[in-house]
Amino acid sequence: MSDQTKRRSMTEAGAGLSRTTTLVFALAAGLSVANIYFAQPLLDSMAQDFGLRPASIGLIVMLTQVGYGLGLIFLVPLGDLVDRRRLILAQGLLSALALLAVATARTEAILFASMATMGVLAVSVQVLVSYAATLATPAQRGKTVGMVTSGVVIGILGARFAAGILADLGGWRSVYLTSAALTLAMVGLLLRVLPRQAAPDSAEGYLATLRSIPILFLHDRILRLRGILALLIFAAFSTFWTALVLPLSAAPFHYSHSQIGLFGLVGMAGAIAAGSAGRFADRGFGAWTTGISLVLLLASWGLIALLPVSLPALLIGVVLLDLAVQAVHVTNQSIIFERHPQARSRLVGGYMAFYSLGSAIGAIGATTAFAHSGWAGVSALGAAFSALALIIWTAAAWSGSQSRQENLRCKAD
Image (cartoon, rainbow, N blue to C red; front, side, top):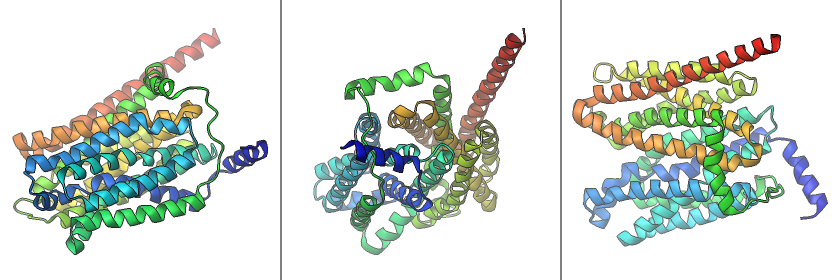
């Protein structure tokens, strides 16, 4: 790349992102992450098609999540070493091929391998988030991250509903065929919209970049705190959404998968509202946003626990839970991206590892709690995760306040 091209790239990056370009980032991120969650309401149909036992079909979800975890560790950090634009486009094309392989799979081996591959490539959503944060100006970074993250959450919450509708119309394979076509169309749109930017100027090799991820979090107290909060809030989030199908599909509700998927649409209201959290972070109110959101998260479980008695209370609880979780999530990312601008892809990969661990803990804990104590046990578990997050945040805020006061006294002396 010539010096003139590099200067032009830097100028374009400094101009920030338009609202339209940010919206495209959000749409692409939502579509990418939805591919991971499409399978949840389709497992019964897929099991019948391949003649699999229920225990075996569960490998689909597991392998997809394992693939996603591997992608976070080994693929996302590449964004700090190579041209992110080319990385995103390549991941999009390969994702379309993986989705097509899933839709046309005729054997278990091809299905499982394709799902795992799709999970690895779905981490393009995190490359998109870090790329958007890099292209945004400092004044708009929180707002931009908030909008893209809202797209991610809409993709997560809308995937189950969309998969149920498409499967009812054309079978489970139509879900992945449709997603493959949409992914190809999105690659074409991204090709036109993504700004050109010089590749990151990094002297580190790939292995050194991977080794630096745990070092960043071990040496930075703020990163550790935000990672722990991510683990706990997504454990609470996963506790709710994993267990919700269990009481709603049983008496007295007997809801179908499509009807249960509608609850995800309700949760979108909170997720979209949480996009404003980035604006508060831009203005220096990240600490207040986090604290208030964690209080709302804990309060939401009081309403969620009323499911056997009041469905409207549950719906309000869903909105509060998604609002709180995504507000903390957006604020977390806005803050960590400011810590080490040269390592944003590594930061988002490491941060999302906390997210994945929390989601797994919540999913395992939710099914266990429901089996032993029903919905009351699920609500107690979610409230415990939320309370622990609030306690840790309060302790960290108090410690930070004490340190600032001590520094002020030292300066005065």
